[in-house]
Image (cartoon, rainbow, N blue to C red):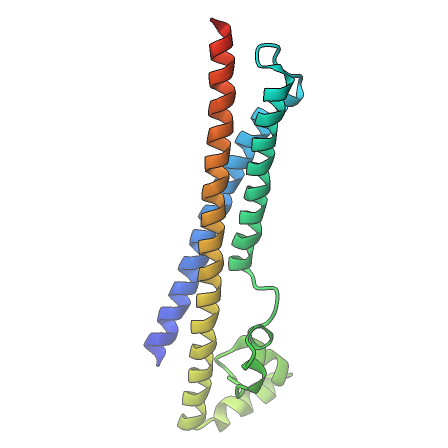
Length: 179
């Protein structure tokens, strides 16, 4: 049981670490969007005309919106908006996982004396059940976070493609008008 708990703790940490990479990539892409948008906002390049500038600007704004959506998904990997017992429909019906689940421990055991008594009073069966509850929650929480990470990466990929197409169109148009 301990091996499984440790494994899912490592998986959750790995998922959060990968979400941080998505957040960093989103920041870089946001900077690129901002630089090109600032160039377009400074005034349409007479070589490309206002209609094309509007088209490139729309592409960059779409990329920016996708980056923001990706950031929302990625931050959902780092921190959940609700406690696990509220997130999962059967969470409220699960037995307490004292000493395994920090939320249960802090909510149910107000003092160190209460904590000490609860630890001393747990037999092997109660500890095993608490560990199983925590493992069940950990598995489901990891799955939820992983799905959010996949969504964040997928949306960020579309943001990058949209940015690249808009940037390439802008650069090609400007270069073609220079000759």
